[in-house]
Length: 177
Image (cartoon, rainbow, N blue to C red; front, top):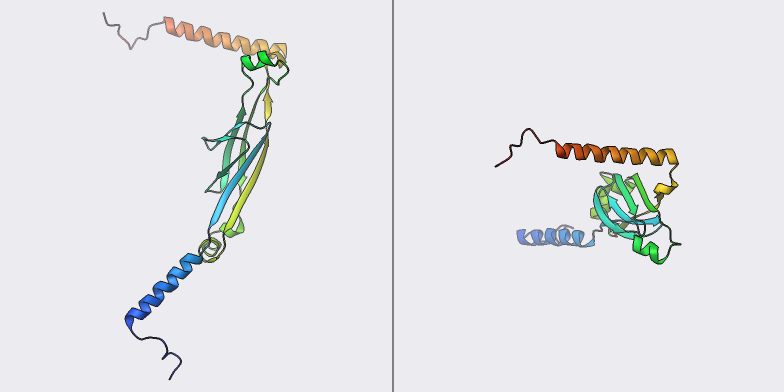
């Protein structure tokens, strides 16, 4: 008896063996999970990544794609009611706009990812922690007088232009009488 004689020659048995092998390979394959952990100083800032609102810091969110991501973090200052209750609280709003490069790990390089995602039996976790320090938005009284006056003048000029535009009828619109 040859060593291959033990294998069944029936076509159904070979197909069953192939299906069982395939099922076993799929059952033991791993996967890659990607998570961003985002924190900010001060905490409680709303986070937007690539134009999509994610929530308030601190937060964890899954991500799919590597590359340059566009982050915008904003923490609003207190309302007038909150400030009236406690005038010692920080009145500043905070803001930060930053591009962050999420580099692909070796396990996710094309070709290697076939092994790590399909044939590696364990799970791979790619966890990225991002800490942002937000910058305070200056309050009007914090600006130098010349800058404050220039921004006030610019605001008044825009208001005058809007009023003038509102008074002049649009030549393309014919009034209905």
